[in-house]
Length: 173
Image (cartoon, rainbow, N blue to C red; front, side, top):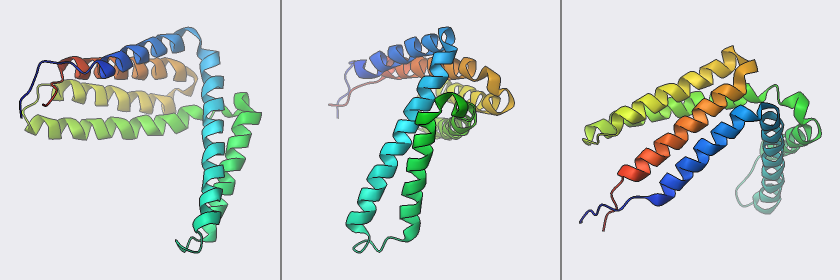
């Protein structure tokens, strides 16, 4: 296979958009929490509806347990709670997203060591990005009131990472 010097402009554009999104988070923190609560509610609601549909369609074929239906109903209830009271439930979002960021940061740290073995020069940036992501996640637990600031840092860092990966990638022919 031959490598060309083409860039992955999709990653670069996605990275720039994430950086802009992170800057928005810094300037509109209240709107950020309510919007995230509404998106989380919609996601839980849609997930619950599709889980119920899957349960009804495949319960006999896939030998699905009643727990799958209970989980789907719970998703719908949580989704409705987020949609009906987004301000009240915005308080738990830092912990939910904090857990995700810690897991994502650990994944990126482990991935950086695997990439290092291939000889890629980007492993150092990936390691740094993973550490920053995991630390932002931990900060969500320790300082939940500063959630939007850490969210902005994480999103900006992720955007810069995508732009760097896209600008330094090589397309395989």
